[in-house]
Length: 185
Length: 330
Image 1 (spheres, chains in turn red, orange):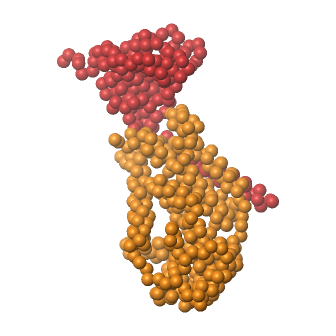
Image 2 (cartoon, rainbow over the protein chains, first blue to last red):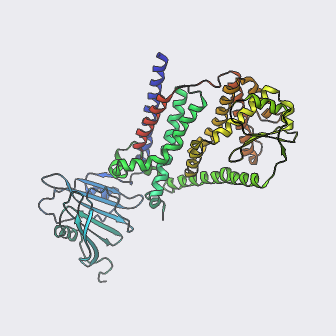
Image 3 (cartoon, one colour):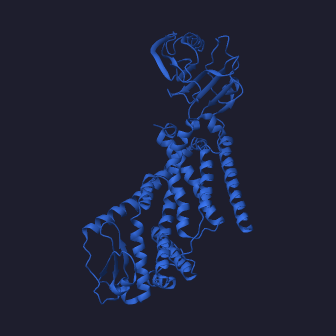
């Protein structure tokens, strides 16, 4: 009986060792390679540490949106991606998400906001850029809308728990300047 | 498609996670077998089935349980996120993901050339080649020995050959084949236990679970952990058939002597030595075969063969622990 108990303890020790080993192996690349996806406390750190000079941030915020972003995630490897999340001032729920990805890749974000029932999808001219505007409902039946467009070497996606009017205002405020490549010499 | 795109695609995620899940499973299973001193081959095999089966179904099952399991937040809090390694550039030049892909390709090549092609070849040869065989007459020792064995018996066919040959063919025309050369050197007990061992193979090959495990092996063609574990399961199968033969005949020493006569020839390697690189594979195979035969003989001589163990609780505990850990490995 005592032997059996010791063997169970040994098995528990093996399991603990495996968990510890996994934690260490998981931590090693995090330390070696600094430019894989991780959270940042502010946007300036993303610019300086990852050398991403152009980070697209909205400058227009409806009253209910809380500044600064509640979450900033960014990576340079395997490709550039910056994700910003904003919360509702009163409820604290995430109601706005922006994504900036290089090379036309889709966003790598967690789908906290998702247009589950699409009511309308149209092509929209966003300060001269060809954008795709999607209007519909989230899983909980609330209004949801999203817009995506190409901005130079990046693809920008914005999702919001609201109708399209606030969303377009926010998206337009992320763009400063003319259509990339169309500037006068 | 570049490497990062592949590893974020469904096949890429599946391959990477099933490899990790198999690796964690094999570490815990092998430690569990040692810690709890699991000696019965059938029970050992059941433990090793965990390594074969779990990684195939773990990813889809976990995703059904929690569709957010692949999310960034989950990955941050996971015990292990393989993407951190796959996106790592060693020395800023060689992506670790490329090394991982090469390991999977190598494993696939071994599967094709060492497992699939030999099986296809063997099946083709068996169908096309007609062995010169005859049935033992009523006055032959084989006939007499078979009469003493209870239950349904497959055909036993004699090959006229001085070499020591003993094998069984499974499938619709299941039969045990043995050579006249072997018949001359085995005594009555040794012959009986050898025949029962082969009959055990035929009986076990009819079981759907073994076919199921082979199908799973084929599905995990890319996984090097499954490759090694499947070979261990196959080796364990020999010991299980030894146990069945001993439990039916009650003659472990006769089976040990039979094995010695069949396999312990003068040129069988006792140590693993390599003089030429080209001989590595052949030498390694011969050496591992000798090791397996030695361990079979040892347990038969120590009369530990056939001892039943009830370790289902330990098996279930191991399965639960592995499942929980693997859930947090993405």
